[in-house]
Length: 225
Image (cartoon, rainbow, N blue to C red; front, side, top):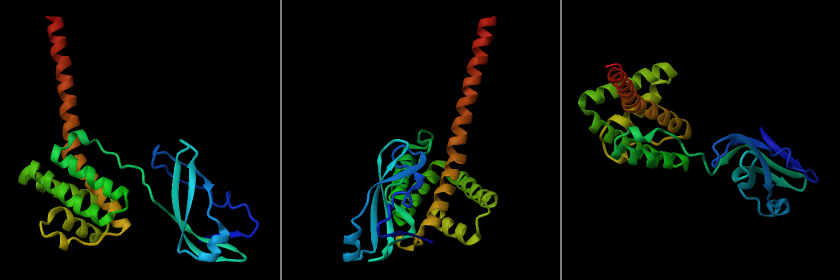
């Protein structure tokens, strides 16, 4: 699929898209605001074209990049798929994580948001290693079992899960880490978020909720005495 803009056309309607805004984190329509000089495109024939959009939700500028398929006297043809040069920040209840794990996982998510998938894999290994130290040997086994449960729930193929096991549970050198593509990095992200949630966030929320319940029970007992 491609976007064809003929000479004399108003390209703005054809170039309208919807995506997650990196500023307000809302899935919104993006309106083209700053378009490239089509005559210059025909002259220079670049491989990629950048277009500045405005988010209809928060009016922030959002920059998207398209591959240029054709630029000649008849018009411009862009590949339909765009690349988001800024991504919305990934969210997670960090306060439940041990502090060293929180620091490393925040950096991992920053790498992911910047499309640095192999740096992301490296930081995921460091964050997972930090978490395992806090959990101990029994916690490491729990984390491994949680990963297998998540695989079954999400129906993730064995090859991808083996790759993720290598990243999260093996302790070899950084050179041994597999090279990730965007799909694999996205699955790694969701599995690690789920693993941290099950091992830390769920426990923390449940413990806090029970403490609050017990506090109300003690207050009721004092008031009725």
